[in-house]
Each structure stands twice: as C-alpha cells, then as structure tokens.
Length: 283
Image 1 (cartoon, rainbow, N blue to C red):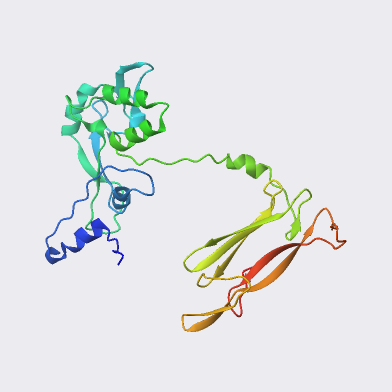
Image 2: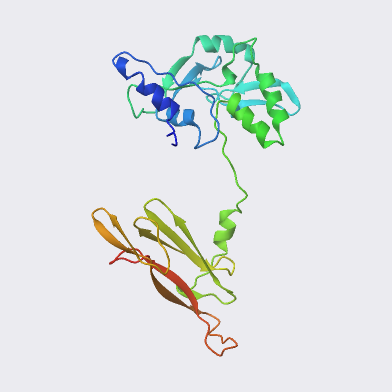
C-alpha cells in the first residue's frame, strides 16, 4: 500500500497546534533555486526584514548589497563598500561600529501579521570572521562555473539561484514575425504539427506550420482528461455526463495552392478537434 507523502514543515507545524497560543515556529535554511526554494517562499510571505547599518561618513542607513562592494581588478585586498547615499568608500574596519548602530527594518507587508522574516548575508560577518577580501576572492574563483557561482550566491549572499536556459533572444524572434491568415499554411510549409498538454482538469493543444515556426494557435478544452480518439466514453463529472472522443476534422488551405498526389486526389491537411462535451468544442 503506497505511503502518502507529508510535507515535513506542515507536519511539524501541525504538531505544535496544541500550544497555538504561545508557540513559535522557526524556519532557518539556505536558499537554493528561485521558485523551488522553500525558505524563499516563506521569507517572501513574511515582512522581509533587513539589517540596516549607518554609513560612517554620512549616516545614511542601508542594508548591505554585494554589488556595492567594489575592488581593483585582481586585487581583492582593496575591497571597500560604497555607500548608496554618498558613494564614499567604506573600509571594512568601520564594520564594527556599523553593526553596533544597525537595526532590523521590515521591507514588506507580511501576508500573516504574526510572521516575521530575517535575511542576513556574509557581508555582515564581524571583523575576524569572513572578510570582504575573502568574499571577493571566492567570487573571482567562482567565475566560469555556474555551479560555483550558484554555491556562492546560496551560501555567501543567501540568495536564490536563477536557472537559465538556452532560449534565443525573444526580441530577435519577435522582429522576424510575419502576418498570415488563420487557417492557411504559409508558403513553404511542409506539414502541420500539433501537441496536447494533459492537465488535471483540461487539455491544452497548440498547432502550427513547421515553416520557420510560422503560425501557432492555442486552444483550451475544459473537462476531465481521459479522451480516446475513435471511441466514445461517458463519464460523470459535477453531476452530468460528458461525451468523450468525438472527432471533428478541420481543413487548412495551403498558401501554395492545392496539390495532387499519385492518386490524383487533392491532398488535405487535417487537424483533429476534440469535442469535450455535448455542447462545447475545443476551438
């Protein structure tokens, strides 16, 4: 018998309900990948507190950011923090006084007013711990390796890593777009392609010509998936019966004109349209 997965955080919180009037739940972790990190989601739902420290030169309060840490190329020992208020370089020996004069400030409104969140990077490490020079050396050493940069952002800066793909620049593709009539295959098109994405409560399909990606239409059909082409099914959903599997051909005209195969018959490009229920059609 399969064992149902229970989220460990949800389970731990449930076991503290007995002490709901005086319980405190702490979630402490290093963030991982943007959109997948549990601690990131929890922090974004909080009031997102940052530790603001005063500039020793102008007094401007700010939370420390890595892009304000600057150094001479190839010389990590020259690392200094540049104040976002007066742009004056701040040597690391000022850090002790800055930390003593710092305070936590909320930077967002929490979804739950009883929830607070705190973020602190290694830039705040006290003198004698991880220095700005060592942080710069770690950053320089990570260059050229996505895995090393990911580890640096996760563990040193306490930030999530944003996964990137190999998709081409969208603007270049957008600028090459062409107008064409819906239902017509562009000149040079060889055949139509179609795909369907089966979700829990719907089927989404898209189709288009293989000619330079020309033409793409998307359609959504609601209902319980489980369609079978060429076969009718009746399934009860929300108190009613749905008819499944009806197939309707849709003709598409080629911009190059009709062609004839060896049999002498005009060739037709068809797309099967699934009828989701008695009264609606996936179009």
